[in-house]
Length: 236
Image 1 (cartoon, helix red, strand yellow):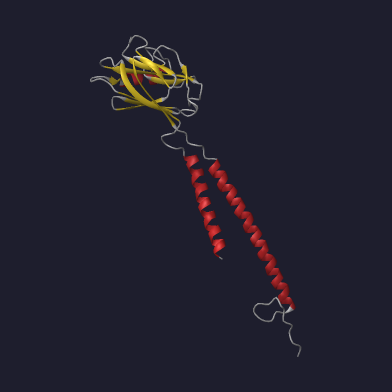
Image 2: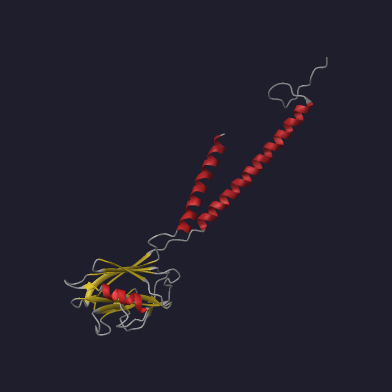
């Protein structure tokens, strides 16, 4: 009876010549799996980075404050009763009846918010907000409370209490740097001319859009999974 040759490559005892070929086949297959895993690893990393890079950057808030019958905020003129308070006492940038002024910010604005320190009995007039919504950026003494850019689409007003008003840009009608705009606000009650105020222009949306949030989530989940795979790889 002929004795079987023992292969020096054997780890668990005798291996026939067929076993050696099978061993090398398995070894080559293992290399292929490692190469394929490395390729998937790179593709996953690329996809995660792409998803994260596709999320638009959130901007900041540009604050302002002022007081007096007229002056400037962020290099832009503001005026109380620029039209002589023909309809009601008013405030505006640059002023009711003063046409428009360029936005001096360096980022595109999507929201404008202002709060006045009003005397007793004075309030931002809700009736004038309704007029402004229907006036279509007419402006002037009869155009109501409104915020408009050169797109001639009024921003959406939201009144809080009697002294705080915010305007939100409709989709596709943001305020770009250098673009002209005007904001007119009318009051009911005693004339608040000279009253102090503070506010902000902001590029941050109140409710983030779902698409950027989904991309951000996919990217973060992918990176978490990638980290787990890397740790598992080095633990073996």
